[in-house]
Amino acid sequence: MELEYEDYIVVFDEVKNMAYQYFNYHSDIQSHYKFPVNIEFSIDDLEHQSIALSNRKSEGNYLVKISAGMLKELWFLANKLSKDTNFLSLVKTSENSQKAIRNYLFYFYVDLIICHEWSHIFCGHLDFIEDCFLKGVKILSDDEFGINKILELEADSKAVTLVLARLAENYNNISSDIYGTKTSHSLERTWEIFVYSTLSLFDYWESKSNKISESHPPIPYRVFTSIMFVSGEVSDNQGIRNQLPFIGRNEDEINASFMKILIKFYIEYKNQDIENISTELVKAFKHCSKIGKGIEELNLNDYRLIKAKWT
Image (cartoon, rainbow, N blue to C red; front, side):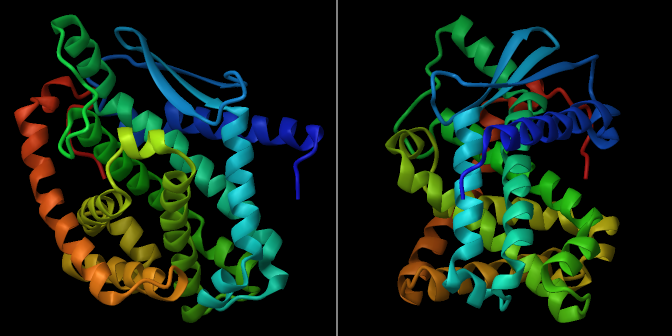
């Protein structure tokens, strides 16, 4: 199903409103800025490319852009997953839920993209990059611990946390729309849909572009780092835990919940061997443990736009 021109106008307005709500009314972030921050948002053709980007215009002034092509691809993936019988079987839902799943996934994906770019801003990545440019420090690197890859991992992790927190706020309604009822099973299945969908998005982008694999870390590293970070953030957030009690009561339980879904996804949906998955996860764990050290060595905390930990 392709979006018609009139549909795109509606989608653009919705997406702009989502970004505006994040940038201007997200009190958890706004209240922690070290100084006044202005973030503009636009949807652009950007020469028919499928990209999203964030720029530093001047101190305290930033721009986030999403291309129309990116929105089209996100719609395509959401629509594809909503009709995928293997995916529907994995989360035990029916074809009757296809439209609800498609619509929720599309805006969930848009949320992730917006928050990823926003995370680059409030984590201080753009100010750090500007400083590196002035000092002649190279950002892009093929090294698995290259500066660009560390920045992307942190932006992934922050974005996933923000989006899951937003999801938790509307969770009961979403579950009812998808499954037609609200039970402990439907709530848990709905959670699995969005975790699987996040994994599918990472997987999709890697398969679509060599540039992604060159500038971003391997998918298992991105997924595992996000899981480790989100588990810690969620365990500290009583509100999310109250909305999603089945994911666990502490960091270890929440991490185990994510890992269970991750392994199930790769075995049942991607048809991968458990031994290969385990090998990749061990590598990802070792990689993840070095990222924190890399952030410290780069002195990224000196560039943060936020002055305190937020959850």
